[in-house]
Image (spheres, helix red, strand yellow):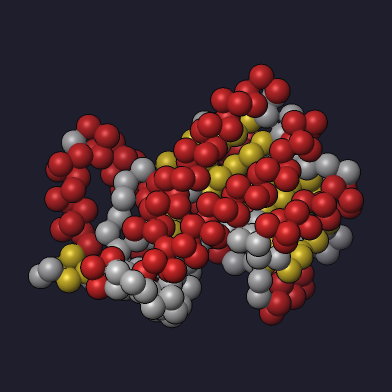
Length: 272
């Protein structure tokens, strides 16, 4: 892990959840860390809690805005001269059935795609020349929803499938240039992403039907991501349930349809 000392790590969405844990752990390892967020209060809290003497820069940026991503990458290069690792972590989720809000769900799904996929597209595109120069690493924080469409999360699943397809294509484009591209897929993680998930009207749901206490912690998830980056894994699927879902969906898709339906629905109603 000492290999990241003085390396420059750009992490999007680093003011909360998994991103925040990644920021803190990389700072503890001696890396130069640049991250971004949209909530000024969370930005100030992260800056205040960073280890003394660590190299942290937090910028106010929205990854769904192309110019913000350009400004973010330019700021990293101006400060540190390049980028060694890009972690596309920023993301939002959603919860709602298409049939219950077929008109209102369109802008919700578009917003989820703009943050989750477009944010990855913009940051990766702007950072790529510097990552080629450093023979660096590009990471996409995906989800089990990137392997298996989840009911009530149609836009979220679409965005994560798109992220994985995009990164797999880029991986084959730059493999001979020494750039490593990978994606990691947490299962259910206590990262509070469900609290800020958009409902069918586009509002933050503010609560979650899931039991966060039974989920993998954001810190444990960050541990696995950092280890996966150090080991240059192709992909990391986390949790037994996540690995089981990916396996079953690959070899027994019909059975998986029924199991996923049973997990998310009770008496015909979406309960999770």
